[in-house]
Image 1 (cartoon, rainbow, N blue to C red):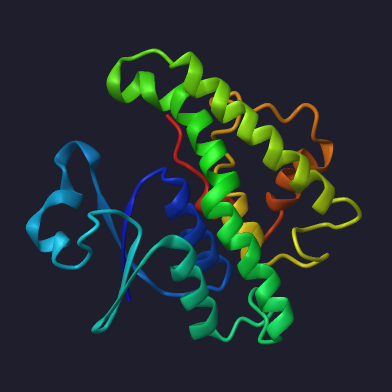
Image 2: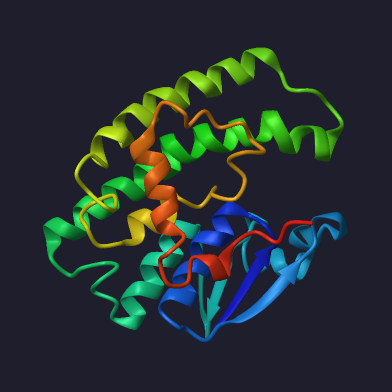
Length: 207
């Protein structure tokens, strides 16, 4: 298998963390934003979206990070991360969709406005966009805080794909000024993720 990735991408981190956690042997192909590698014709023939991560397993190509981690868990028979039980799996799937559409977007927008935007474009944060992202984050964080009450991880006391996907922005939270102060359960969960096998191996390469 081959995995096309950009360094320090939160969506890439999900896949790398699952790969390390399950000890899956995957060839990593590193792209550079400044080289516009994802816009080259040979890569667009693999993934017409021009985005990473992209997984190639023989003649099978998979993109979308949450779909990739599902595929890797199933291929490895990792019932602990992605149980075969239909209700447990549906519960995990629910959080994968919620991450992609709500929590991940809110956190990602905070990181963009407070950190990445200046670095990549030289522009200051947009006040209206920042306020909108902050409001959406607090809505999501209140729900997640409640979900983590009396649980070690998102769906139970055992780590699952839900945790690897929802925690993918860890490492950038301080730079993105993500307001976690009012959410002790979420903050403690991020700390617990640091002890999960494979998680630290996928951490962003700072400096």
